[in-house]
Length: 284
Image (cartoon, rainbow, N blue to C red; front, side):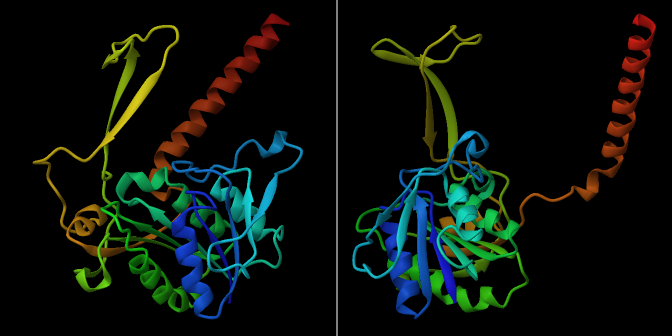
């Protein structure tokens, strides 16, 4: 198969090289297209492409796999997937692999993940895609663990329905220490909590509202507070117990459960338009 390998950590990140080596070793035709810089947290953003004359790119050589065409683009990972899907870097791929991201993408963090965003963008073109992430941990980083898991899913994913997207999170342990593989529900929280601060000279204080007219805000990311409840079936909880988690995702789609709200919105907007039109006729 022809496979696009992308990520959001950047084309020079070790995770993309590890994933590429695994896929090339299995005999697949691979092209690597990823951001020139770290675009973590970019979600499915493509940037202001409507106001740009073009997208700059550079060729790269990945360590140990010089024969693989690799390109770094001036843009986020979803744009890399989009450009590749429309033929900017050769024939359209059969499959998209996004990763290996260094850091888990579970729960609500998947909304903001550039790794997941690239996979969901590929699905808009009808392609099957896999986003694979490795939990943060101690050195040395066991890249072989997520690479092995991802490669094991390639043939299966190729037979899945078009636009299938799987989000896979892998514990940062050697293969022999993985507790198992579980299908996981998307948790309602991520693996981080956040706190906003504002700079206050040499010291830093919690932000007080309303904020100053200008300044610098710092966003702290930290592990969840101890003692919080954990749902045993979610991706974050299973990953914390050293399981590989597999979650099927879908991108933008019509919200069938909100039909009543949509109908009310239609009526409210129509009434506002009618009232505005009547006022303009009177004024005229």
